[in-house]
Image 1 (cartoon, one colour):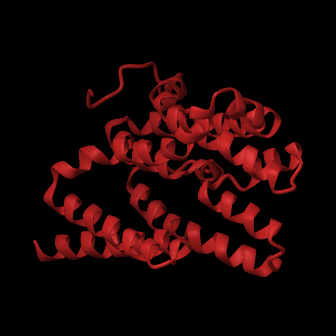
Image 2: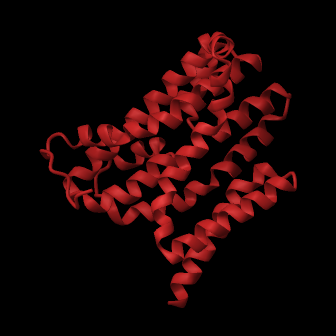
Length: 235
């Protein structure tokens, strides 16, 4: 991939859209799964779509639906959702060096998902400063719309789709993890990144195997960050 995008400055959002298209292979199947699960848990199709529009937080949405369906107190639902999304505290500072002074950035952070972060962390440094806002807008908007559309499809026709193609129901849960692996694989070429990502995987597996899956993501993210910055400090 070239160091600078050869597109007109007036249309960097098209580049963001184009480069985010591969993310749809992970977003849409998981969003369909969420829409189906939300409806099966007692939510209406409109409520499922509203959750994807307003919360837009992947794993947190599944947890939110499960806890609400189980009758958990609202305060506990909010706390657990925030705990899972605590990894965004790490995402933001890592993108700050590449952000411009535009006042639109805080509004666009609603679209900062795990996959958009991984893509932006690689691409923003390669783009001219004046193109970064447009690129992020295009990429994050495509991802958001695909998640909303997948949720609507799952809520309205998810049951029929999985009945007609049973294999689809088996494949959907693996789509997002597979997408993560594709985005992270290039980072394993660096020893520091390999150690950080490896420690993250090990911590997440240990917590999950010991029945603490809700805490696995934030704790693993913190562990990986500690390893990454610790190894850099020792250089």
